[in-house]
Length: 531
Image 1 (cartoon, helix red, strand yellow):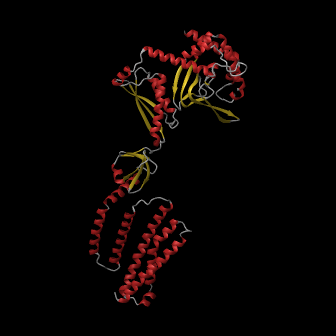
Image 2 (tube, one colour):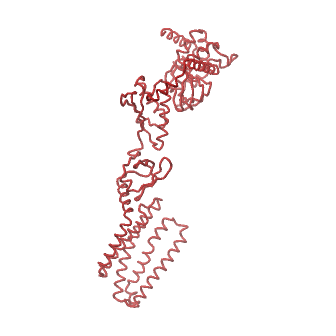
Image 3 (cartoon, rainbow, N blue to C red):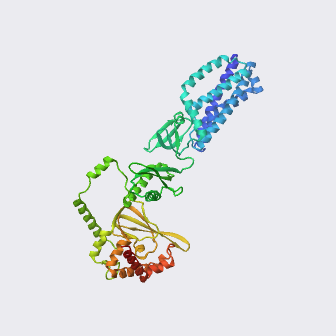
């Protein structure tokens, strides 16, 4: 290569970099008006495009004659055009892929260093092919050098390559994706990002765990979001032999059904697992879609189980050591009697403060319907029940002969009714001293509302037999109650007719004092026959 050729080569390089620099400045000025991803695309292909255009110009016969290029230089220009054309095409495809990721605001799956290294390997392969095929250069020494260089780079990046290959495997098999709740080895959480190098998991403590893909691929992966979002949770527990299994199973299922996050389909299921030394082992199984709230939902179900078991007298057996402690804590007879007396006094006071047995309006508004002594007798019969937030006392349309007085806490009623072909819902709340369920107790009508426990509550439960005992000793009270209840129902008759669970016959019976009185007399007769 003579001096003239060297000057042409130097001028070629200077012209290329000057044009590239001016092009970059132009892109910088229009950057404010064009999308950023599009500018990035043009910037990536600008360098090979500029040199390719200059090489094509230099390749023309007129330019070569004007510059007096030697035959050897002409072959170099020919090889440069082919190499730059291949370089431009590869850069164009690579830039288009990057542009797609940037426009979708997604991270590029390959690490930057590995991405550049792969491009360099491709460029070298093309360069060797051009040198050997176009210029006839012996590339054996170059291949030996590049092989050593590649081996060094490969050893340096073997960890990265291992992660990339594992990432490709995980992506192809679709083991998990962004937003899935997974357990990888000992780590459990939601996948917030995944690429071909690593997986980022946000655990329950709000910590981001970075798991290399080769580690994730070698661990056992449990995906709680596949094949769909429904995941089964279980609560194993042991119950005393004294509790009828049918009652235990129904209480377990009912506890799960009352939690809003538990799916209705598939429905919760309860099983007997085994008969053991201390009791019967049961398993409650239910499905959820929000696995992130696993512990919260399980806690809500378990809390309801405790309250339901307590009201039903279902005991969970304890170990021998715990049993000895319970015996040690056994209350002495005189202390037990004192406690029961205190409980009866609480019942009496809260019954007096309630609106159940008082005139609602008129001259006697607020006065007791029965003597105070009778209230004290009733206080010895009623049961104090404990309920937790979210439980359901009864549902609209059910039959029942029990009413409740709120001693502590709050309950919420929900009445569903229809008007002009549309369905509406009306709500009300009942606090301490309030009453619910008395309509069904006095009239025998279906429940006119669904009652939810709004917050942890203590309720005084009055069953039909408890109330009938009072009526049998005070015959005149039945007539007073019949008048009061029928009068209230007549005032609400228009609204009661909108409740589809109530038939015309039900409403007629609920607004007729004779029907209500007959109902109360039948209760008394039934009570006497059962004695």
